[in-house]
Length: 443
Image 1: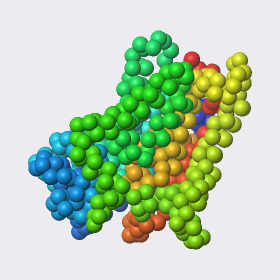
Image 2: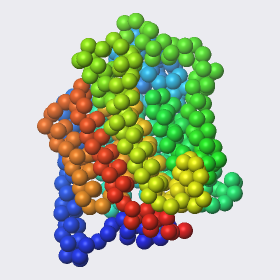
Image 3: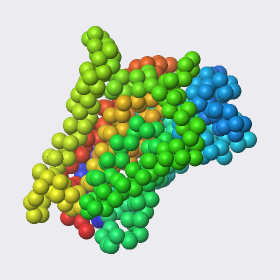
Image 4: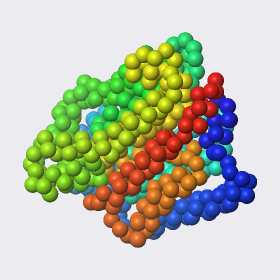
């Protein structure tokens, strides 16, 4: 793809104005980096016993190795929390927990893995990735929505799914290539789709993210094949758990269903900054807290009005604003438009993943780390004003709030910040007809 696409993306004013813009943007980036790193350093020096999730996970692995059922909290040493993951993960996690190294040094290990995520994440249209892009990606991974702060504080294994998500996106968001079905680039996309499916099986509620693969700039048959591969990747750990760990699978079902009395259980309405819990708060305030239809109707209204409908209208606006070869039905027009605008199609794909993830019914604080990965891919290409706005609200504000000691858990601060950043990214996509025109003109 020609570098003209990047040139159209950063329409330059007069040289002196551009120089002044670069100076204040560099200052903002430096300030953001100082606050993000300072916030992480401040957490490290606090005399608080963090890492409860890594202790639970490794205690479950140890219980399984000793022949005890890890889904009963009474069998887990040193914790009152339950193990929520599929039985097959007990053997997958065993190497990570061996020798106690992870429990003793998880903060440094998690930091290295987060930096690795920033290095793995792909770009969307540049032949070469420069130092500025890499640094910005790493900064956003570490600081966006304070997601990594929650992962590091809790020791949650979302850091592992984050690494696999970054690798899957690198394989999926490859430059469009024409050719036969045995083209090597398509085989890599298949591997990326299967890996993304495996990642979503880690936290089952994020499975709808796989539908975003339909927006890739590929023929429809190939996109459906990618979605099928991702679905197989999602289902495989569930089937493996049921076939090879039947007793543990039954215990897992009881645990996640809250049917083991006297212990912590995973619940959709457990305190978390999600649209579902926001809907629950509203219906409860209105005296409809016991009405499931009212709850889910309100949740669907919030998810549609705040995220999904604006995204869909933006895509339809882009398709309707440009002539498409041959006419045809809306799905056919969409397929052709995506293939005619490969870079825009990949941006839409990542935006769709961001939207579907953000709409999840159970969005715990540490899950904002993975949400930050999707945003990070899009942030790098933002023009100066949009980038400054995103940095201010997505990184600076959360870091400042965290440094002041304000509690994020039990509030909707992170949800509001993420929604605002989604609208910033969506508005940028809607405001770039010149970029789309140049992009579509390139081979």
